[in-house]
Amino acid sequence: MFNTFSVKTHSRDEMIEITEEVQKWISSQSFNSGIAVVSSKHTTAGITVNENADPDVKTDFLRRLDEVFPWDHPKDRHMEGNTASHMKVSTVGHAQTIPVQDGELVLGTWQGIYFCEFDGPRTRQYTVTLISS
Image (cartoon, rainbow, N blue to C red; front, side, top):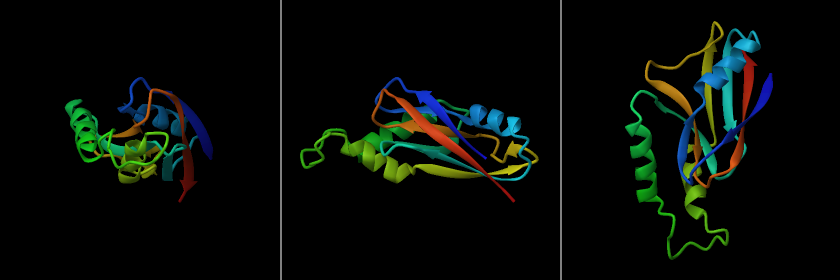
């Protein structure tokens, strides 16, 4: 089972929680047990699992990535000027694998799935692939 989702981002760097959308689709598929692979279809946007209780986690996360990978670096040579976004995705990753049991994503109490935009705003896509056990 496979599905493609669209997400509209609103700023250059942004984390959008997609947990509910992914769970809703899994439930509609009557999928019981296995894994869900959530993957970004972009080289400048990734997927991560992180805390979804305190919004300051997202703020701190994005600030720290900016500190490590500043947008403007005098030695960057990539002609599109978005080297930082490529570096951030390589650090965060383009996909996450999440267990599914009894039709539910197996996440901790404070965990959520995030689409991570690093070169927005844009309309983006991510996929979810379900693999049964």
